[in-house]
Length: 229
Image (cartoon, rainbow, N blue to C red; front, top):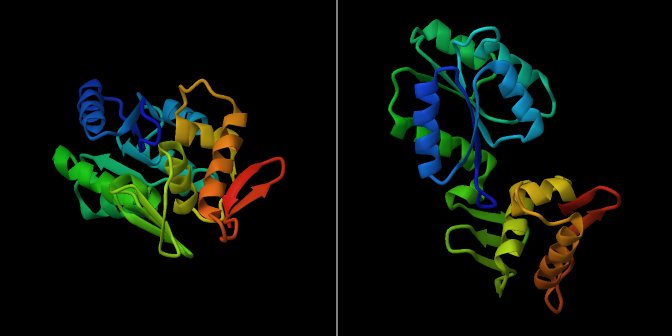
């Protein structure tokens, strides 16, 4: 698994649908997790929060509507975009899905290409660096397509790890990232590195961004982690 890939969770009880979605999402360069029902989906969200959730409406035991309701009622998960999949095509059903908190609603049968476009649309909001957007924070400009970074017009040379760190920080300025969460996001969940590695690379990023005259844009939150000021 490559670090920094957008993470998509598919909650779908039909095996054929899960297989098609997983294959196409992986081909798009996404990291994919799958759940066979609503209960498993909620557990996976707690264990490894995704960037986007693709959620089937009609599932046994716990419906997609109820899963969405629980996600949006939880302060830790309400910001995760949910794309609802349903065979229900009536306007009433679409409105119900959106009112429950889903960011988008796709009617079955759907075009896989259209669904991928809708996922990328949600990622532009939650993970803009993953879809090639240019991000700006104060005098720092990060071009995620060309991997160029400037500060006050001066080119900043960063290694790949420092670039992914800065991408993570600049997507959500002010958010405090724990070392463990940074390890998952920047190095990947399967990487065998410890939290001291995070400190080393944050130090390198700081040094590069400060240059000879600049201020330090990264805040250390004692006992917690780091944030972009």
